[in-house]
Length: 351
Image (cartoon, rainbow, N blue to C red; front, side, top):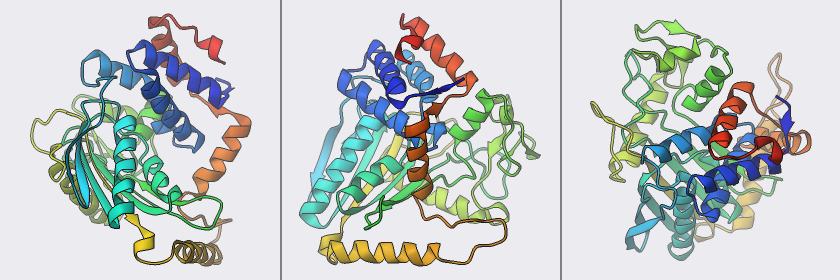
């Protein structure tokens, strides 16, 4: 497939979600999030999710009109119920609430339960960083979507349980770490599977515990599993995933990994830290920039041309894709076309 202009994909996504029952405001929020993920090179969290979200609406797992409901509010935080709404709508609202609380109290912690797939976490911690705060977000799948084997195991017991941390700097873009606690997020395997491509060595095992590069094994019966982050030291990724399940699953009330757990929606824990309560924001930002400069100035290993700090690759990718467009794999585009046909939309009219 050719590359598409970001605005064209955005308009297409808005139209699909509106036809699926989403208010225009929610449709735009989700479309903006998906296309932004594509722009930053995270195609696993981009427009390929359109079909998934429509399917979730069909089976009643996603309520396209769902609104964030604050069920408890106190000085340093709040608890939120997502009303089965779009994760991008609910998580974005939760981070804005955490920022509001942090500006008033120094720190703000918000728990979220009962919301659908939250998408790329870096979008939310970047919100905090752009507001002059530090943002921290972790998410689990409410104890469902178990895709990852524990260190030393061969069966699925945990979700990919990602974490993101964002911080302001005087540089051209915030510092944003966004990573799964597994070797790769499920979405990257999904993208390769839809493209008919293998996964890299070391990402997955099959149902018997044998290393495999066949992306289809993750969706086989019986299924394979993703591996925790860390390779020979995967106990570190496994430990991180375990603790994230506690924060995002148990503390939020969203649900933790247990037998026969069906995906009920994401659990999310968001925190914002008001830097000004600890030190001047300008000084903090200058020192973050100095740290980044010092690290980037490190002599490079053979075969490495440049050292990047968290968020830098995404910022550069955005510049390129804004200029050259977003490439959509043929398998993904075929699925998008089917969704458009169902809602009597001409996908070519948006390009």
